[in-house]
Amino acid sequence: MRRSFFAQNPSVLWFIAILALFTLAVTLMAEATGSGALSTSFVKTLGKTLCLCLIAIAMDVVWGYCGILSLGHFAFFGIGGYAVGMWLMYARTETIVARSLEGQVIPPTAQEVSDAIASQIFGVVGASEFPPIWAFAHSLPLQLMMVVLVPGLLALVFGWLAFRSRVTGVYLSILTQAMTLALSLYLFQNDSGLRGNNGLSGLQNIPGAEGVPQSLISIWFFWASAFALAVGYVLFAFVTSGKMGSVIRAIRDNETRVRFLGYDVEGYKLFVFTLTAVVAGIAGALYYPQAGIINPAEIAPIASIYLAVWVAIGGRGRLYGAVLGTVFVTLLSSWFTGGGAPDIDLGFYRIQWTDWWLVLLGLSFVAVTLFAPKGLGGLIDLLTARRTADRHGSDFGPDKGALREEEGAK
View 1 (cartoon, one colour):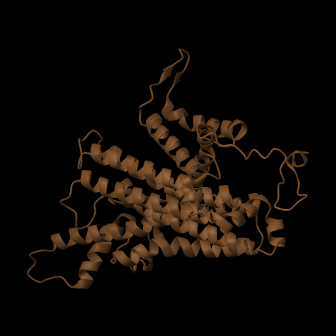
View 2 (cartoon, one colour):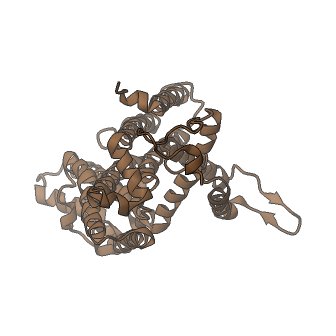
View 3 (cartoon, one colour):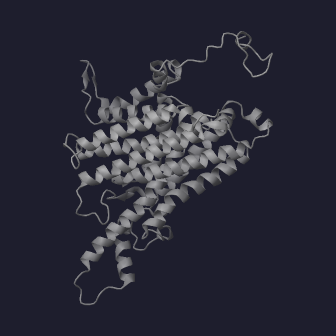
């Protein structure tokens, strides 16, 4: 009898239940909807952490399950942020310009309003016209489509070229990192159309919600981030289960043998790479309105390396492991770099954690890789007493004469 999806993946129900309880607890303690025990800035931090958990799950699927160490997925995350940020900045500036032009004897034309908006946005880089890339910035639905389409198309084209050429292993990682670096360097230029090093700012000001306090807006985005994380977890649990999940894991373990068995390895890899890029774009679109600003430094290759560290510390090949690693590292980073951790005076030297946090993170990554390859997710296995089946020499396969346990161990 075939078991249901949730019966095959009990961690999905556990994860959704824990996420729902966490969301409820934050709601009851937030300033806008509860007791006020949690500040607005901390609610935003939690909301951003949920977005990072979503991209970490995507990274876990493409690396932990499919074996593709992508060092460029944060580029898709940033593209999603830029796409929604363009509309946020345009709509907010349009409101400011409309108010400044009110009461004029001769009403301004649409072109004059557009020129005034462009001057406000691009004056900081010495421009006064909208570049072609801003053609849809006035429309929220179209920009939301860009959140999905641009990362998806970029991943599709890049993945098709790379996988078709049979680029694998460290060479593929270098290519993804090179793609990210090229995109970051391009965005740093003032003529990129995205304000160069200045980036897009003021994204926390939601058009049409000028009278709504930030405390309430922060909880709205927190709810949206929690919902997106829940949907993403279920989606990727579905992708990594059943026949598709078996093929994806087989590609990770022995790509040549899977190809020999007749499976379209490139097709599977391209599907996983593109799907995870789209989800990364959605996560970025939810993250940066809570951060309030996005600039090219957010897309630098180091960000994607941090992402790989989160997944490794959490435990590759476990969706909940990616979440555990992200929550652990990001909240610990906020504590160390935000002044929460007290400095240590050794007499001859004073350890300031704001300077030493990255060293501590690097050492943690090395320690986990060497001594705890299952990461934090391995602790869940210990707590749930997860063990391999106690076969006692029974057949490995369904047929008589299949390798037995003692033979397989040789």
